[in-house]
Amino acid sequence: MVITGRFVALAALGVVLAAVSATALAAYAGALVVVAVVDLALAGRIAGLRLRREPSAPVRLGERATSVLVVTNAGRRTVRALVRDAWVPSARPSPRSQRLVVPSGERRRITTGLTPVRRGERRAAAVTVRSRGPLGLAARQRRLAVPGTLQVLPAFASRRFLPEKLSRLRQLDGAVLVRQRGQGSEFDALRGYVVGDDVRSIDWRATARSRDLVVRTWRPERDRHVVLAIDTGRAAAARLGDEPRLDAALDASLLLGALCARAGDRVALVAADVAVRARLGLAGGRDLLPRLVGVLAPLEASLVETDPQLLAAEVLRQVSKRSLVVLFGSLDTATDTGLVPAARLLAVRHEVVVASPADPALAALAAGRDDAAAVYGAAAAATTDAARLRVVAELRAIGVHVVDAPADVFASRVADTYLDLKAAGKL
Image (cartoon, rainbow, N blue to C red; front, side, top):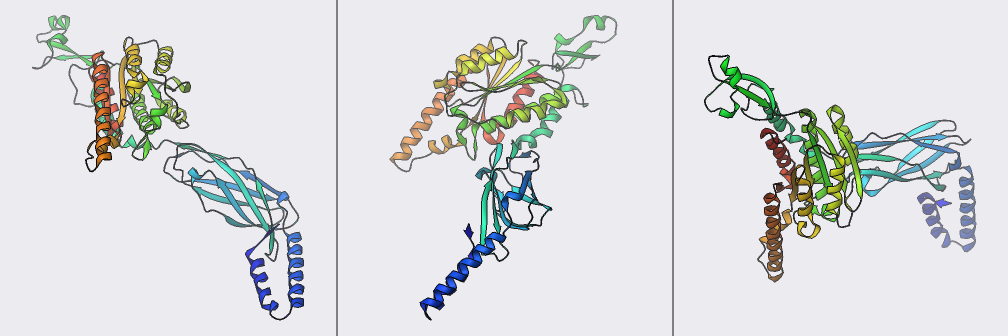
């Protein structure tokens, strides 16, 4: 039994009767309790309610979604209830509670707005129903389990770069009139020699049949393989501004996946720390981006030290053909985790890019000179920066390409590296 605010207000009136006589107060209190018990007996039975949740469509992080709860009254009395459809806090449900009147044999729908602030699968907690009597003095209350989930997809903020990257891709692929000469690895067509053309592109057999020099033009080869290797360990949990490092890697992966789908390349994915957390076999075409989003959405960083050798071994197991491997990790912790040996192992058989979003906090620490603590912080930031530069030099010495950029342009720089390799005929 739950007493309502109306019951409390009526009970407070008994204070006035206390000034008259104790007998009047006792009679009033007894009558109030009897009326409340009767009111409770007349309240609709919560056991007669049937609750069902309609499926919620996936939503991107930061967008608003809705959850619809269908309440059917199979009991004999009308249910006058206050209903709270609770979710995990990161789903940000609103409103907190709603009033509902369901006559016997009828059904009603309750809509709860959700504005999730975290990616992944957000779950419903429980539905609390408080059924009041006709007088509103007392109520029955129960918590009911009504399972529900909302799939929160990555925000894909880097899609703003997509038109620019696709325009450059069309140039590389020969889909616009402005052709880039001498690029790519797949034969396209023959044309007349123009001053500035690479003499190595001259086709001497075609030239022998013509009065002019004839050169071959090339285009980027299609159906190449791109492998996204994502570190989901402790370093991926570090926050870069308002989001974890892992989210920057996922955003870049989606942009790269969209470009690969348009370019006709096939993409595979491996995400791991001390165990494989996600895997996607080679995929391409229109199905690539939806499948990639589905695999990336539930990924979360684990507070464990990543085993880069495991990640490299999974990549080698995933693809045998020479491919472009984009390894998303952290250059700040590379000296501790063994990123360089793993990249060296991959570089023997594949073209490798190590991509790491820069931590803006390091630049802020490096500028600190206000007091002794700030100076120590600046020294630590300088040490970390020096170690990162040594790792970058080691990686480039073994032929690995490095992307080290701020999080707001990180996805764009990764996409530019992919396009540069494609233009140079290395992909």
